[in-house]
Length: 221
Image (cartoon, rainbow, N blue to C red; front, side):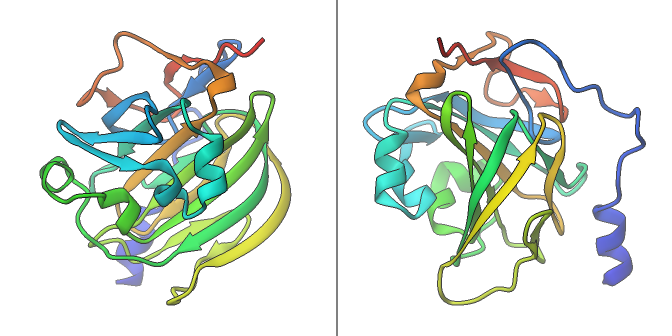
């Protein structure tokens, strides 16, 4: 099993991905498929057609949830065949991590379409950042075959029955490695209303993306 996990979490070659350098660009945090992306409406993110879930539940914090009302999000699904590391979609300072215990449902499109509040029920690690747009988040969501979540700031997270919070002060540039899954799962980028995120028309549900590829623009004044 250790050899298998090492294979899945291996690094990319240095020149394997290009990090888009568009000013104010938001880039994909991972290789994978866009599950959904769009705007947060009435505190709700779109999970799948006809299914929404609450941003405060996703972040396991009602105050953070209120802050991101009317913001925007992008959900990237990492299949088992994908590169399993998660990188920064923007430049920011990591201020807090919040491990949230939960279920370990599969996070593929079929499950997303049929399990209510999937991403707000599964085990996850919420990473909170200060950015030039205000607070932003990257949520690493565990799944059925994920053997663990690890970040540069925390090391591998020890599973517990309680929420674990830790404060940090670590700066990351867009494209830098944030963490990794021990097998595929989902990464969710959450941006505030102030970012005025404008996703590219070419970025739609089921679009294949690579880490560092431009997803859209943040247009904060």
